[in-house]
Length: 344
Image (cartoon, rainbow, N blue to C red):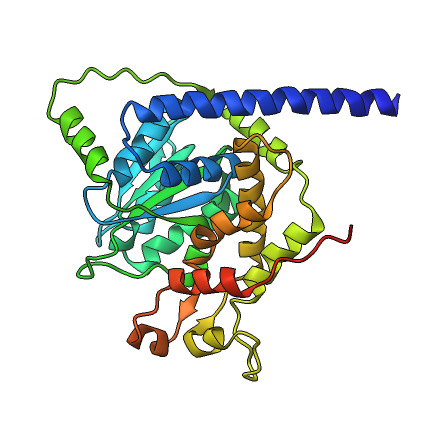
C-alpha cells in the first residue's frame, strides 16, 4: 500500500510539473502581448510568484515597472490592488482601521474593522520608497506572516499573497530608504534596465498605433498554491545547497578581521541573513522547473545570486567612496567562492 501511495504521489507530481510548464508558457504569452523584452526581469517576477515570495522592481522611470506588475495581475484570476506611496500616506491607509458603525435596527454603535487595500492577493506597492519608514513598516507583519494587527486584533490575509513593489533609484528628493528589516523580506530585488534598440523600436511602434489588447486570465489562486507546494518538493543536492549557503555566509565580514575574502572585510558592513540562503534555494527550485529540470543546479544559484543578495548586503563608506556596488560584490563572490565537489 505505501508503495502504491508513493507511486500515485509521483504520478501526481509529474502531472503537476507538466501543468506548471504549460502555465508558464501561457502566462508568458499573455505578458508578451504588453511587455517587450526584459526576459530576466519577467522570469524573476514569475519565480517570486511560484515561490510565494515578495519582489521589489528597481529601475528608472519609463521602463514599464508598474505596467509589468499590472499586466501580471491581469493574467491571473486573483484580486489585485495598487497603492501609490506618497509622503502623506498613513499606516491605516494600508492596513485599514476601526470605525464607528451604527446598527440601524437597534441604534447601537460599535467599532467595526474596515480592511485596507493590503487585504488582496497581489498588492502593487508603487514607488514604495516615497513614503515614511513608519508607513513602510505597516507592511512588515503582512509580508512575513500574511496577517495584520490593528488595535490588538489580528486579521489574516487569505493566500496567495504577494507584495510587488517598485522604486526609482535615481530620485533622492522626497524619498526614504527602506529599512533593512523590510528589504530582507523581499525575495528578490529585481533591477530593470533599458531595452535594446530593436526592442525600443517595437515598443514605440506598439504604443503609437491603435491597440485592442485582450488579456486572458490563465491561472487562479488554487493552482498557484499547488505550484508553490510542488516547488518545495523539488530535491536539492547537498553540494548545491552548500554552495548557496557558502555564498551567503561569505557576504558576512568577520568581526575580528580575519575573513578569508579581503574585499568583504574592506567594503561590507553587514552581510546577508539566513533568509537569503532559503530564498536562493527556493528560487533555484523554480528556475530548475522552468527549464524542465527536476533538481537544482549550480547555474540556478549563480543566476539568482544578484537579485537575492543585492539588497541584503550593507556597504560601508569605503565602498561608497570607491563607487563599489552590491552587484560588484556579488560578481566577485561568484568568482571567489568555489563550488563544493560531489562525494561521488
